Image 1 (cartoon, rainbow, N blue to C red):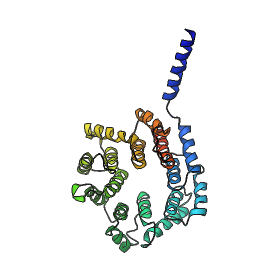
Image 2 (tube, rainbow, N blue to C red; image 1 turned 90 degrees about the horizontal axis):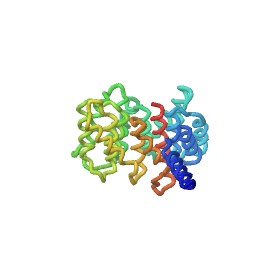
Image 3 (cartoon, rainbow, N blue to C red; image 1 turned 120 degrees about the vertical axis):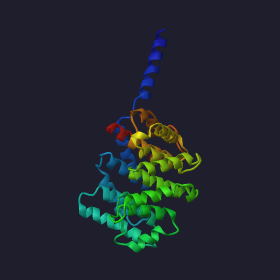
Image 4 (cartoon, rainbow, N blue to C red; image 1 turned 180 degrees about the vertical axis):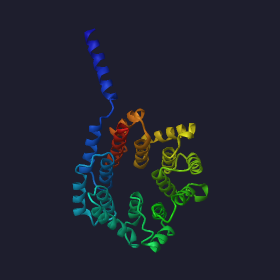
Length: 309
């Protein structure tokens, strides 16, 4: 009888431990581990998560070292400059790194123009005023990713209203735009980053998200954008969208799982912590160590952001 009681206590104790939420310190420790031990874009993501969550210590030194040894390697060099721009201590430093990113985009024969265009958009910078010809050729060229990232960046040119860009991005999600999932994914991702859509724009986005096939790699990006840009008045529709987003915690790709984690980082709550704990602990591995660390880092960031709310 005594043995049975002890065994029962041990089982209950183990279950309690298993259900404990992941502590912020563990999240920071994992992000620092990824920052120091992983390479290239996984390292970039971990660095950005630490910066965005308010834990910048060590990030700049790691990436100054990366710049020293890998600063001429495209496309990773753009990621290095992106991180260094974000942890710069002065406007002078920011200009140095931003100018390198601009140069990579302005080189029309360059090997990492798409990455540079994406980074300029993320840093809310347009080169349209200083290089209108290069910008127009990128917008009208044969590379959809380059065109869409460039379009996104033009929203930050004072001469162009952001709503014009948002409407064009939404147009990319309609049936008339075809079934190019890359085009849809980037457009939806950009709309999520904007964050403020009017009612008509949101309705079109939500409709496109509901229409996107479950097998489409773009679907999670449309759903995530629709959830994060929804107003409080959207009601039941938003609840359904949110539920659809959460299903991607066990998706088959790193991109889908990471996008779900980013959605929770922005709009999740404490009820989502157990789901994120499973991702943080890699309970359902993708089978690729690098991809698994990228997802674990995204989950760590989401947990930190929820804990900070």
